Length: 341
Image (cartoon, rainbow, N blue to C red; front, side, top):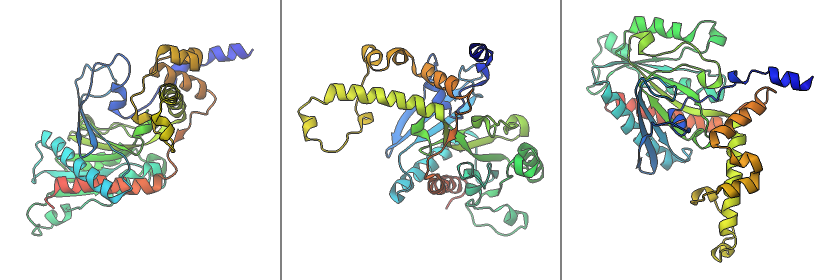
């Protein structure tokens, strides 16, 4: 009886979800590799996708910034500056100038901290549209900017894209910038990366609650989507942990007997070392599981956890503090890209 029930489970619907294009370029048999460089210690990656791409994303430009801790003021300033420079480069692709009318939209739920990035950023945007509308003399260098956050369908009862469409029809912007919290299939990118995309966004897609798309196709206006992955799934954490265990094992096997290791008193971050695990090591340490590719390992953990309801969406415990800092970074980049301040 138990075997019959297992065979009736349709595992095809348990897809591995991520909003991050760079996550997908790391999968097996993907030919799209990002153009990567470093600025002041921040890893910057650009990916250009055409309509025939095989990673399941809309065509367009995808920019990813990866960094460490932004809760430190000095680090936050560095990331803010790099983000401003790269966002300006993205805006240039749209022919942005100070005569461009921009609508900034903060997507998300203000009552749920991991999903509150959009509203937090929206509150920090320098708005000027009302001054332009009243004919007030606006200081040179400021562009026409308006902002709002529409809430979520679960609290308003109205489809988010319908609210945005209504505001778009009234304000008639030349450009829309949408900010939202994302999901990632990499622990290392949670709260430590920013994605900017010219392809628009589908709110909630990363956590399996996909809403109507917000893009040029649906609104008739170019849409730049900015997001930070604030959550990942339990399956990703499990599979990453298994990979970290393997790297730890390989590191200890190679370096634990060296004379230099005898002088090290504190634990060593083995992820900072160039550790390669051989197939024999993987099989010895993990048996058949060790012979799986990273994609296969993630798929396996999804298949194990999802049918029993344990594939939880997880966020770091300090998310409330980090979201506040990340909203500072993103609002700084937007304000300094749209205005000369």
